[in-house]
Length: 302
Image (cartoon, rainbow, N blue to C red; front, top):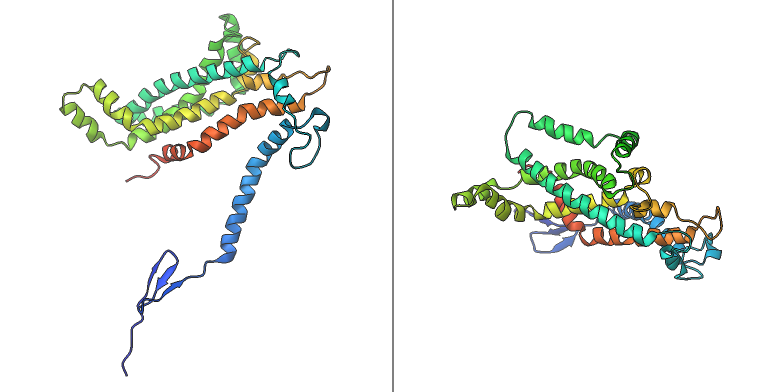
């Protein structure tokens, strides 16, 4: 009695039998449902506070504590109140201060971080591993432990309520982030390209500028976004070392004054929080692929 072999092939949930009949495999339905439920719960956990902030920012002051889950008694007056200076609030100027502090911090931190990371990735010297460990260890110091010594130091040299009093500590906080991220990125780069450029007549500086920097652009761009976001959200040192002149937006929102003494302007605070937060969220969503690729660069050894 002759026997017939039943060879099959499987690809992406489809099974093709020897007779050419394609059979779609049944997925594990409970596992798929649990996956989607988990994703939805995580999204709700992360996005609901922002959603409630936006909803409240559009509500009339008289309905601040309305629990309707969508905007009711919609008004744009809260956004006008956030920028108004009638109550002594200076949100507009604080917004410009945050942009200036974040931009300068990011640029200086990136310049120093790029050269440091390049040296750590490209050069071989004793103690390189410990240098990187010390840089990472510095990022673990709690910021509150630095407030008192920095306040005393800046008071002695007359730096309180100046931009440099906020920018320099911020640079020290983002440098470990930039060095760590860019070191992993530089380590995975093909150094043969740099050597080829030098064989073609480029100096070390020209090879770095014309070959290495363009290749490292995705990692530098990702690091710039993360550094700017960290500087933008800094509150602790800014609240202690800054003043009205250089007050960033995080401190300005916390200092919002209401129409009456001891009255908290919740809706105006929510409007200001929306103005500050939504652009960052949009920026991260737009460039999420670059951010993920930059963060995972160097994570897998080839």
